[in-house]
Length: 236
Image (tube, rainbow, N blue to C red):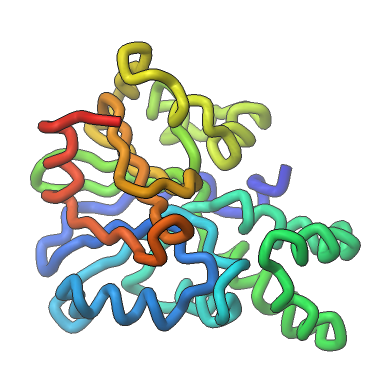
């Protein structure tokens, strides 16, 4: 597991100035993200913040620029499975062949420029978070890629096992679990995820999955208020 190379958890206080926006997997679609944020009313000058659910790279036309987004002080991201595979290049350059099969063709440009690739990976290690807790006026929102452990306190305490960390960035089990068998994640008001390639936003108990790009060619971008509204009409 490469998750230990990045920050395990970061806490964000209430945004007293602007609006917080939560964004599904962007997968290399840099310009689409900028355009979609603009349409959603995002304004960095007003103190707005952006929280990404992970999977910054692969599939889209500009993965490198999506990694560079992490250098902006108002953009924060959790750690996705595609991001983990990027880090694995440090130990096994041969992983590039696997990445090419899942939208990582852009990495071919870096085979002859390994220093640039190492710089991108350094940005990951320095700025990515395995998970985030965001305070809002409506309650606390956890941000983690695929699924959360049953108790969010394990995320805050950094006490997840390697197996649990793997599930948090790879598993679809809680997403696929029937609504009537779903359980509320403890010690957090709402958790937002990506990873699923959904046609729509899916809510089960206090978990919301917002990865709609691949199925709809549109990014889902929601404010805290919009996320909490899904809990009122909980549906799968």
